[in-house]
Every structure is written in C-alpha cells, then in structure tokens.
Image (cartoon, rainbow, N blue to C red; front, side, top):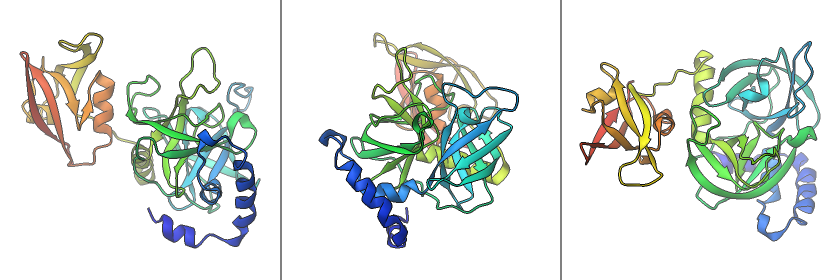
Length: 325
C-alpha cells in the first residue's frame, strides 16, 4: 500500500485528534498493545457510521446503526450487507459529524458485504494484505451506535472458514473488542492499512464481546468491491464440483468433503478429479466441508492455478485446478 506517501501528506488538522487519542490510549492496559495514535487518527477519518432507515418499520433494536469504511476513490464505502438489509434510505455520519446521503451500489449476501456510493469525496483507506499471526490490530466502528470508537488487540487466526456466518468466508480472527454497531467497520494494522472489514461476533447466548471476533479479509473484500464497481454485482466462479461433508478417513471428529457431481468442462473435471474423490486441501487450505472449498476458490484470480490434494480409493493424490478467465 502507499501508506508512506499518504502518511507524509496528512494535514496538520489531524494533530489535535491524534493528541486526544494518544492521551486516551495511554490509559489502556498494557496487554491491549494499541497501535500508534497517529495511525489510528489517520484511519479514523475513513470510518463512518451507517444510518439505515426502513420507512414504516421500527429500527433494529439489536443493531440500529452500523459502520462503513471509505475506500477506492473516496466516494465508495464498504460495509456489512446485514447492516443495510432492505433499507429504503441510507445516510452516513462522518468522523467529524457530517450527515451525508448514500445509495446502494451493490451487495453480495454470500460474503455479507455491500458497497455504498456518495457524492462527497472523503479520505479513503487503502487495502492491505493478510496481517501476520499475532500482529497488533485495532477495530474502528460505531459500537452500540454510540459513535466511532477504537479497541485494540491481536490477530488470533487467519483464513478462518466454515464458522457458519456467511456462505463464503475468509475471516481474520481477532480478540480486539467488537460489539453490535461495529459491523462494516475497519480492522487496521500498524501503519493504518485496512486488513479486514468487521463482520461477526462469535457469541455464546450473548451479543456482547467474548474475544472471538471476525473481519472479512482485505483481499476478499477488495475482490467484492472491484466487481461491484465494475458491474454492480459479484459473479463468483467457485469451480464445477458439488460436494458433501463426510468424516475424514482415519481422523476422529474431522470433516472432509466428497465430490458427488462434476460440471462438464469445469476445472475439477479438466484436472482429472472424479465423483467419489474426497477433497483434502485446496490452495494450501484444509478442506473440512463444502464451505471451505468454496472459500478457498473465492480469493483466486481469473486464470489462477490452484494446487489441490484429494483421496481416491484410500490413496492421497494431488492435482492442479486452473480457474477460468
């Protein structure tokens, strides 16, 4: 990302915000390991509150407001699709309190992402790649609808799939505090790069944070954004295999995925796979069910070659899928 250039051009107007953040972060416990206040202040300019309105219906009491991140040319905002739902009117509230009308540019229920458009140009946040495991990160969002706030933690896991929230999942897991209202907000790294879009809280009979929170990875979110900007919708190419979950051979409690049908001329058929083969991995990702397989292919670019391992008649084999252009 062009973080160095962007940081060099920050306006002096941010100095006050950075100073206030530094004072607040000084009182956080040491284990929170916050990012530099200047990085948080830089990213906070690009995070907005999303204010959906459903005429004739009361607001969602569990999450009446959400969050979003300004990206691309400064006129696009990526957010969580479940925040928007079927809202007829959408506004955003910027970090400095301005209320701006927004409209839906496109949505993808399979990843729970949506893109809004505005006529005002705001400061965008640049996408970054996958952060290292254990890296410091901060979650920025409109938690409980109280306004933008920040919480910090670490990257607990990468490429989480089959969690059960979305059909296509590629999550960054973090222990940074995330609560209702933060959905669609930013997960940032040191330097202020966007490494994830806040999406879900893993709970046990409560909507409050228990330290297991998920953000859609930046590479997957960027792919959704680019397709919506190009054509207003997302067209997923997830191969031509129909799979079903089965117990993994010789491993108690672990699941795999068996091919039950293949589309003619699909990448699996071209690679020599057959119905009955049990998929073990794709692109280096362990396959524990059909959802893992779909998520493994979701990040692939057109024409990519994806190594896969599978089991046939008790023998482990390997092949390479070539994704269509």
